[in-house]
Length: 213
Image 1 (spheres, helix red, strand yellow):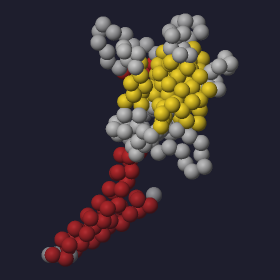
Image 2: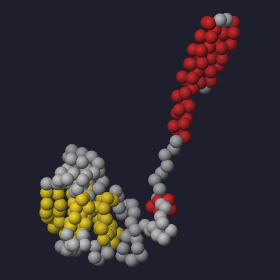
Image 3: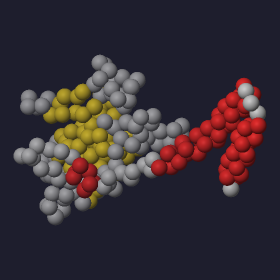
Image 4: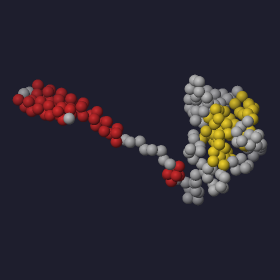
């Protein structure tokens, strides 16, 4: 309603300029045009902004459909939310358990007074249909966990500045043994820290590190 009154007033002023000749009339018309543009443009931009409705994230099933793979390959869902959140590393052990590192504290880490938010989950496919339907938190409150490698019934884990060994010794799927094996890795950049311990063909464990130390 207010905009309609504004445009009606503008039209009346434009008609009144017909009785004015010369430069004065041109100047008045120019300023009225600028005023109308200044009023219309914000509404136009607002309408365009409202039209840009963000799309909801794709479901795991839809994500698979949107992924292009070689004709000789097939992609299947092994695990998905809510069983896994923000995964950055996965590894299978000799029993078929799927170990997943969740780094939910990336990139800034916990706020002052908060616990670290990274954790490690173990997932099991109990009905052996290829989908891991059960998930258990094996270790939590970890600072920037970046990788995991099954080793002698436990796990070699890379975290911010260190490498740890974790193991469940009483069968409750929780890490009751936590040993720090190595420390001193640089931590300046959360994207370049020691990560992804991997068992090589020579039986050595290799760890990537983007900060050279």
